[in-house]
Length: 60
Image 1 (spheres, one colour):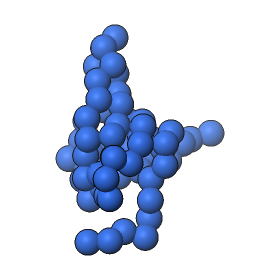
Image 2 (tube, rainbow, N blue to C red):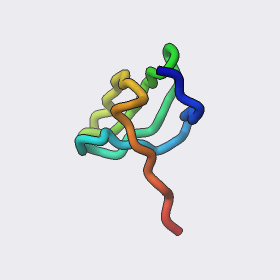
Image 3 (cartoon, helix red, strand yellow):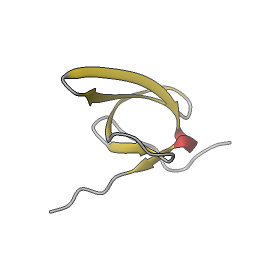
């Protein structure tokens, strides 16, 4: 399925199922994004399909 909405590096996202806020690092293949987040002091990274992510709106 093709998406007209694209994420870009620096966007803040979260899994639709919940979990920590993550920062998009890059699109690694069509509709799959490498994201980074902190688990305590440890920087973790994973690749997630676009359909599993929701964007977080910055407040302020």
